[in-house]
Image (cartoon, rainbow, N blue to C red):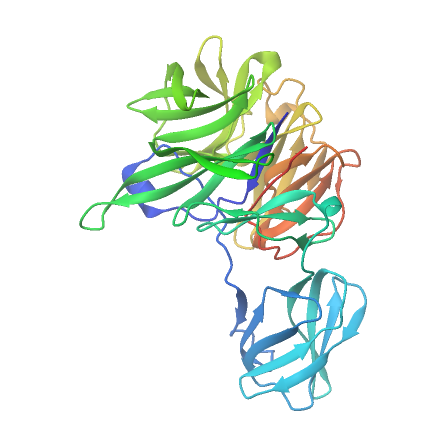
Length: 421
């Protein structure tokens, strides 16, 4: 059984890719710093405020900033719930240190009580060390570059111990899980002697959960477009000189099995760098964006019987992502409602034929208001879809009730997820 890798993207585009019109361009969410800084809010009494994103419950927490009064108090509120007092350890001219009680894990609003006024100055994720095997729901990828992989519990908002690290210096892309092996891709930009970018080159790796071993399948792949699992094999698609080549991983190498003409513009990106295989229609489905001009969105179908790419969906303003949920291919379409305010709605679609449909002819199962839904991944055991919204926030969508459930894991630190089943 194949499961998707999840990662956040669409938020940054490397100039080198635009300059050279590279075919493949993956967007990964800009990782936040280890602290959150607020120096612009005129209503806060603290200047230069810096708050750690995550700390262990019961530990001392340091807030950087000027303006903490000698009699101030810090409280924590659990995501709209109960309010808890903390112990002030030290107060300095440019910092305050407090200790939390041994609270349950979750996202807490930090409340500053000072001079008879109350200020909500930010938030922090409190975690616990370690994670029980029975609590592991997924695996999280932290960091675009120098990425690390951890077991996590999304419902309990817990991160376990480091599982392994990916290749240093590369930018993380995406991947798939099949037969207890996670196949992933990342890339680096090559520069000439004058520090001028000359292209992006990809690495395909594999982590085997049965043997706990990580290995590189192939390095320095040029023109990488997408990867996926089909008929018990890993495949990649590469592009060069107007031709796409599909290659199968077998006997320790990638061997070409098919090629077909490529008739669209060169400035395109396939979302998460993956495709899905639709066995019933003997076709591959992938989605992405044409970066030339007005950044048009598309959904593609590659007919494997008569190799040719055709476009479906009929909607160039909605950025679709896909995932197999209970045997059916779902499409999660993000539409910008208010660009200035960053408001995005997500349309959840389940077409009867995932290789032939129009957005205008389908009724969404639900419209998730003010929610982005990058790179969904399905957990069969709980019949839920995990996805990443803005600010590395993990969402949980219940396929049966057709609504978001379980609360948000705000500032989780994750830029990607995948599941094993």
